Amino acid sequence: MPEAKLPRYRLLVIEEEPDTLWFFEKVFRRFPQIEFFGTRDPKEAVEIAERVRPDVVISEIYFGRLQYLTGEWLIDRIKELCPAVKLIVTTAVWDEEVEERFSKKRGVEDKLLKPYSLEDLVKKTFEALNEPYPLTPQNPT
Image (cartoon, rainbow, N blue to C red; front, side, top):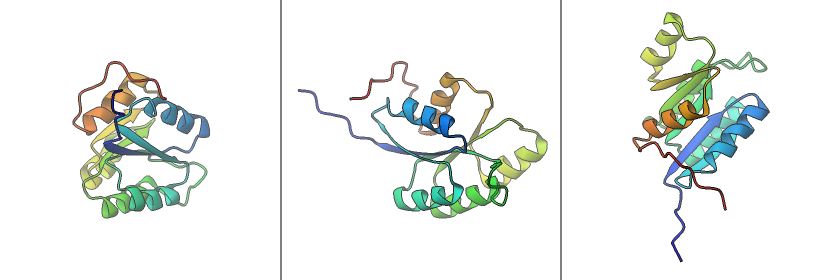
């Protein structure tokens, strides 16, 4: 009997919309090398990051329902806790000002512009892990 692969990487997703967070979880649970953690709450995301030390974080940068928390605050806290983490942000707007605030000042590695494709989501995540893009995910057991 083949040995089950244990997750080698930890992925933390911060997404305000419950349906989108569910989608992320459904997608990434199909990859046995990834252990998925997700939350809708930026404060909880910091607690999770401190506990699990993710390899990659995918996060929104604008939190409509939590206007007192910013993407800058969240990314700064996560980078303090996990300096080597790879950050991917999701946003509908990416202009020079956003580029300056996130890429240049905070070390965000990549972005997903909404609406993004499933292929882009998976591909950018595996690129951040320096892993080859898996063409066929496994079905969860």
